[in-house]
Length: 352
Image (cartoon, helix red, strand yellow):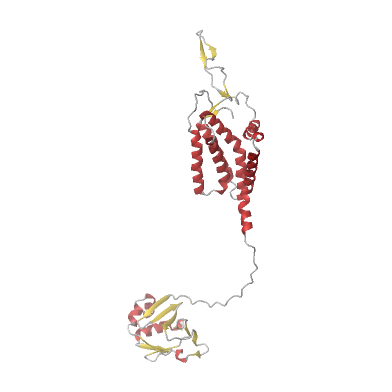
């Protein structure tokens, strides 16, 4: 953690840590519990790198306290929360993370710094082949004079002075956790945070299991007898004398409201049982047509149902005759021709 990081290097390290974690975690979103624990592991593994970059940036800008905590905390929280985020929450958290990083990255340097840097880094890892700015290698020339050749600074890694990556990473871990110097209360808080992080991925399932009501044994209710509903008519036409013509699959039904009568079937052609006055529809020319059933609905509406074989002749009779009787009710056919022609469905039968 020795040295200083430029604003761009600092932001790049935190940004790549976040983007890489999001890419890896997204591969396991189909298994929510696995993705949640993977995000926690990535946050823990990246913590030393994120903290070291933040400390180096703070050493250049002279920042202390909360400005150092915010970038580290926001990055770790963002990485750990990736499996839980919706698109809206992710955008909001991204804005907060960018603000936390920017407030440290954009702080000006607190003092004049050595201009020698490599990839935005200044510090002991930068190894120069020159011992001072004025000491340069002299190359001989044919003219007898010599010209200084400035040397480019290089990282200690290039000169093989840097320890291997594993040792360097472990060193960052040791620098990140000074457990021996932590007070007992801080150690206890750290243990609680780690335990909470381990339980969080499975907490929703455990909570649902605890809150789920105990299964109750319910005796199966006996199925109630449900009467089938009458299918809706394909065409409905209101006639002048307050009755309706219904057409369902080519079968004609004459519907009207009569006197208050108990709901149910009042005539059945197959058994010849019921009200005999409903046995036949009679026109004023004494022609008659038998309905195969007459029913009364709960609101005292009578429904006289005829065979599809009689549909055409009955419609033509309704247009030609002056009246008809059915179930003891008299109906006038005045204006019926005009009414039938106003509905193309019924007019078709008149033209056959």
